[in-house]
Length: 366
Image 1 (cartoon, one colour):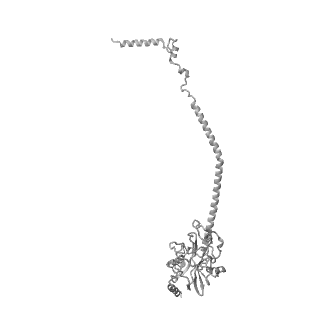
Image 2 (cartoon, rainbow, N blue to C red):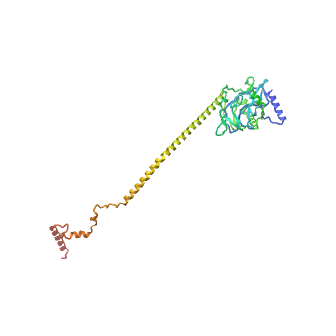
Image 3 (tube, rainbow, N blue to C red):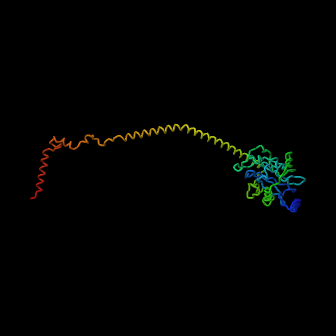
């Protein structure tokens, strides 16, 4: 029966000259879709991107996983209502997602990351800008600048991985607001979203019969980016809420770091102000010390100049008047004394005289 419906859908598309873009649309099958895999959300690539949760699509007689990804909204003010599987009349049918000004009914399926079964808590539009809720989405504030924090949207409910609405699945009905949203102006999935789905219908590893519910690629950063592979998760469904709690804790740590950084910055500013105040108070004292040093230097220079101007004392300890006496004065002083100042005894003079005479006799020739 499922094969017959699949063939009929393809033939109808060929007759209309169209390629089936959303392969799960308008298909009813008797096999329930697999549980939702558990995965971590990649960081938002930039301002204006919205998270499109992953889902099980159907094609080539098998379910295959379409990874969650970041997509730009087709126009400002529009939000994405995810598609969902519903069990009706003994068959599972796919209800396509759409873009609109408000979030409609998506079967009560808890896709996570702001799509907790009803409504949307991942972000909001303000003045033509989309702001990401960092309490729910993984955002790098150095890349994404339009953000806010609202933890009230996180619901403390038991997390399950059921991927369809109806008997045996999720028992949920649309609210009045969700029914009103279905009657608003809608836009279908963008070309980027359709290309993204077609990319993974051709990937054999995304097929449920191959991966047994744990696809190789559970998310990619941007639609159609096959080279960007996330960390596939094979943990129980409750781990999704643990991941969200971990994200909240990490956000709390970042906020504490920002507070501590602000306190440290304030301390530095106060210390700098104290140093500047001390410098201002120290300045007059330093100027007084410099002035005193300059005055002492001037006095020292004057004292040195006076010392250089003084005559040097003679190195010889003799009196100047004795050194200045001429030799003639000494001779005049000795003239009254007929004897020399140091005269040897007569005997010694005679002996010397005799020696001289003997010497002369020896020198005379014979």
